[in-house]
Length: 464
Image (cartoon, rainbow, N blue to C red; front, side, top):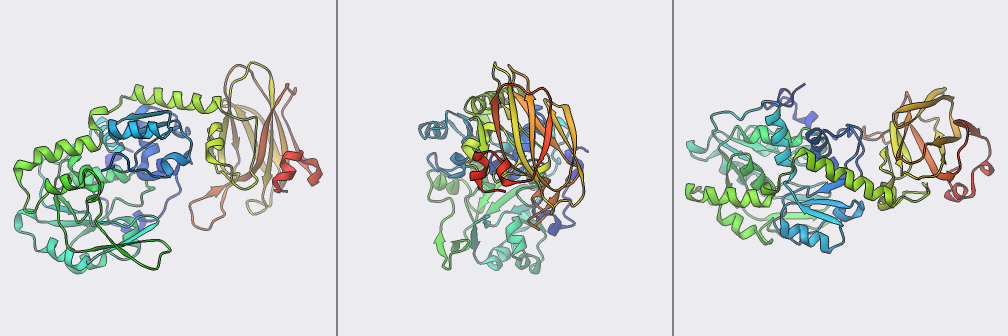
C-alpha cells in the first residue's frame, strides 16, 4: 500500500491513532522509534527491514546549538546526525565520533512521499493550529478555551481553523475545549506510529497557515511543509514533570538562541514580507542544505555497524539490564536489554579469523506457552537447525564460520504481551551468550535440569 493511501486525513478514529503501537522493530535507541524515524530511513535508503539503525538523529528541531538530551548519548551509537554544523561540532566535542550536519527526518519523509507520486493539493486554505503539547514525561497546560476562542474568531482569510492535537493531550481530553467551540480536531497519532511524519506532511499540505502558542518543532516543520507560521501568545503555559506536584511557568522555545528570531518572523497578522526569511531560518534549523542521498545513508549505517562490532566483547549476561553501549555492539534486533526477545529476533557476532562457537542460554517461559514449540536457528539467513522445545532452560551450541560477521537469528511460532499494554510482545528470554574459540561439529540444543548446569558467569546472573 502506498503511503498516501494510508493518509488523506484519515481522522475518523482519533482514539485509535493515539494508542501506543507495538513498534515493528526494536531499535538500538528509543529515539529511532519516535515519529517513524527508523522505518523512514530504512525505506529511504533501501536498508533491510529487520536491521535497526546504527545511527541516531536529532528527533526534534533544536533551537539552541548546545541543547543536549541524555538519550542522544545513552545508546553509545557512534554516528549522530545533527540539524546544523554548529550543533554537530558541539556533539563531536561531547564525544560522539561522527556527529555530522544532516537534514532532519521530515525531509526524508517528504522525499519518500514524492518518490511514490504524492503531491500537495494545489489550493491551500485555512489555519492548522498546534497547541503547545505535553511530552511523554512532561505535562503542559494553559488556557485551552482562550486559544480555541481566538482560533474560532479568526477572520475569513484564516478559516477554516483546525486543531492538531498531540496524542498525550488527546488521551487527557485536552481536545474537548476545541470541539466545544466547533473547531475540528485532527492528530498525527502516537509518536511511535510509523506514519506520524507522513501524516504531519499530509495535514500541513491542506493549510495556508500554521500557528502555535509555542516556539517548538511544529514551527519550522510546518514551514518546511509549505505553511506560513503565526505565533500567538494566549497567556502563561504551566509545565511539570510527570511526578511533580507543582507547575512552573515556561516560555517554550523563547529562551533558546533562535527563539527570539523565530518569534519576530511570525507575528499576527502575518506579514508576507517575512515569509522568505521564515523559510530560510526553518530550512537552516531542519538541516535542509545537508540532505543525504540513499547511498550516503547506507554508508553511514555500514560505518556505524562496523564501529560497534569492532568493540564487541566476548560475552553478555542479562543479570538485570545490560548497559546499552555494550549491548548495542551486538546489533540486537527485537531483543531487549533485559534479555526478553520477540518471536523473530537476531543479533550479530563480529568477524574473526579463527573458528569459534557461539553458546546461547535461553529460557522458554510457561507464560508464553505450556506446549512444545519449534525453535529455528539461522546464521546469515540460512537455517542451521530446528528443535522442539517445551517450557524450560536450554543451552544452544552453534558453530560459526570464520572471516565474516554472523547474523544469528531465532524464530519461534508464539509470542505474548507480558506487560498487558500491547507494546512488548516476546517469545522467550535470553539468559546470556558467549563466543568460544574452537568449533563444535554440529548444532545442539540441550535442556538444562539444574542451576549447576549453567556456567559460573550465568549462575552469577541469578536468572535460574
